[in-house]
Length: 370
Length: 207
Image 1 (cartoon, helix red, strand yellow):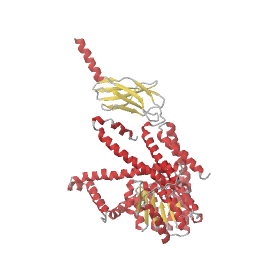
Image 2 (tube, helix red, strand yellow):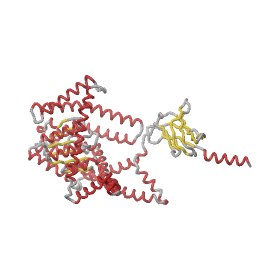
Image 3 (cartoon, helix red, strand yellow):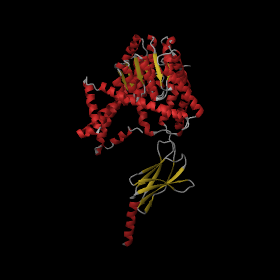
Image 4 (tube, chains in turn brown, red):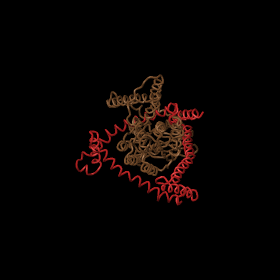
């Protein structure tokens, strides 16, 4: 009888204090980490994680609380074998887990980003489809954007007043898509200033943006047959210091009093300083940025503001190039899909809280981006 | 050749960078790091053009005695002095260029930044003039948010902080996210157009 009780106690003890781990190569990484999972936790106060490299002894590499179930060891070398053991500590007792080993390997494809890939493929399909349609000569309706309609008027105003036009392509680098969008608009504005023989001033904060802006304006002047009207000194680099650049542009606005100011591209804290100085000089101002926190400042201080995506649509809108207009239509369909996903996703999320529909949470997980 | 070479390079690099985004492999990371280094190297070369540009512009202003030419003299002087000090004494923690940076450039930058407070007040005055229904709504919303953020708001009514929080996290966030969706799609579309050579504005606009 006593033996049976002892065996029963041992069985219960092993149930409570058994500890099982599994070591996995962390998925979707460069092969520089291993994940240690506690498959069967024990009733302990905390866990100690030990690691052993080939030819060495076990050493403590970290601790886990009693609630934690995984440990990420990101101090491993790719292709090398590592052995792990977790020790559960309860008062003076120690419970040892099984020993598990793994080798960290690098992955070529990040499977967690499949959803992004699917999204890009669908969206690109729409854009290319509408570009193809536009190429065939089909007329596409594009809504009016008042800020872009005002470009012609703004250039005309400067010409009539005999004053220059100031174009600031933001303070971002050439790697920012907003800067590239601004440079695309600069090309269209430069064509108009070349036709009207109006001075175009383009101060730059980034040297690479300066070199690209220089070429864009030069090409635009050549394209409309006015290479002689291009003035090299009007497209210039100032400094890469944010507020020194702001002070310099403010100075230009106060001294030269441009009739029209364009603030297009990436802007940060200087947005309001520039726009308010421009408003004080009485210039007509057209601004556009994808930096959401700066939009209210531009809306308040400028006559027209291109909000977010309108900045990217500007080049197509101004040039009226059918191929570019086709891509705008594709963007609209992309938004429609996002809207549908949002509606369906919200509905599925609500339903997933019901026990019989809990599997919907798996579908929603697909849309998480890592 | 003048057109097709940059367009071809843009296409190849665009596709490679897309593939890089989906691959965590060390080769892919190494490629990305190399590209970043190349951007820095090219920027360093372009800086020479930048210095040439700023020098020519200000020399021209001084030569022609344009309005504010005195500032151009200071700019040219500052350019030469900092360059010489940097080259002669280096950029260590006790180098003269550090003293100039900490005692002139940093306070000047802070001064420019502080002007923002005054411009915010004048911009807010213009925005909150209740001339239209939208401006009135904006004024009311701003008034509630401002009251909700300061202790006196809570003292007037304990509901102010929660209403302010709701305004920021629901209608304000909804509008922000709407804009961000548009921006994200615009970025993808513009990138795609540039990679495929449909958008050539950055090359000077000839299509």
